[in-house]
Image 1: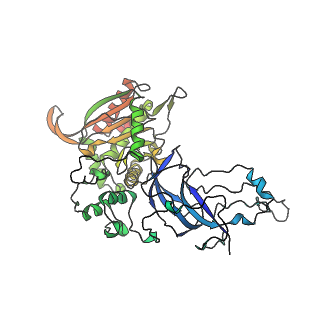
Image 2: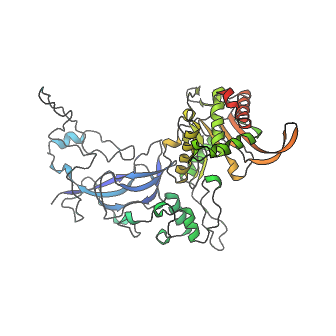
Image 3: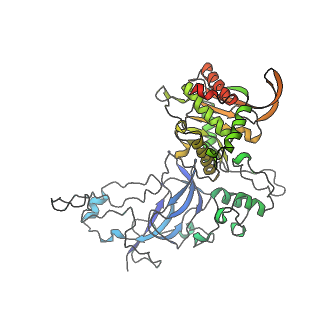
Length: 482
């Protein structure tokens, strides 16, 4: 019988210097046979929900943490029974191997701790037939990072040998909830929907999905509990998740501060008390750009593309930055330098079920209007599903927040850390306005620009805001600013 051993998988560093993550859901259960790189869990960092692949091929023997638990990096989360591939190594190789440092995983999918770090050797080449560039040493066999081609599923019977270098599995750590041993049959939904269902006490097995291919949506969960008439977020931005109603007689509800909300709170406090904010306001007659928007929607070039006022405001910001590049910069406190960006990663603040996030569109200044509209739609859909990657949330250079979708006219937005400016676009409203020396009913919008006064002077901020307003009041100005 093939020798087996118990392997513990510790929560890896998911990048961005994060020290902890929350277990959102398990995709496997105790007793399941899994393959290498099979998705076994969803974990939530301070920035995104990430799928965690299995570093081993074997049988799940224990799940050490339950969904909803915040786990520190390096703590065991799951144990596997795997084939003992190192059992045939010679005793002479062991001391030399033990003296070498072990390498810890640092990214999702990086794999388990490398048991053997023996260096591969090169085989001498010949002129007739080149040998492989790398061949493992005959006495030291490194633990494979990919599943061996002939490996068969490990039997779930009692191991023939004692577990190697690990403590016996504590059965008290095994998840006590009933485990679905066939995760493929679970109802299809997204992490935010599963969290909403959990908060409302809804069993997704009882909910019929109306989304694509039977996907269960938030509306399906709300309808199931009789809340189908609750308002969704305006213009496609996700609303905050519904909180469970307090029990009768309960005067307050406490919710742990964690995940995105914890990260956002720390970032906003740091930004507010580090960068001296200045906010300026400009109310603009946007009737011409709204008429342009209506024409573009009817154009064949934009057929199938989602166009909103945000699309044209974003384009106006990108054009205005060409004349005012000082707002596309950051203050580097460590090096005491102002860093000027020659590219624009445009951040778009999005209210999601996990809290406020600011994913950004990489190199947005290089995109034509039609491509910008596609990028904005993809960014919004990804953020709404809670699938924005840590990379998508990092590296922004300037941001826009659309408070107008909530019916708000103006505000004083706080800078996204590491950026010099953020523009808030208010609601488009019909109001009496001076037009051609007469008072007419026009569509107006208020723009609110906050900027870091350490590196952006009042003149620079004012000129940028005026340029954005001029483009929205007269889109033809784009030719003059190009």
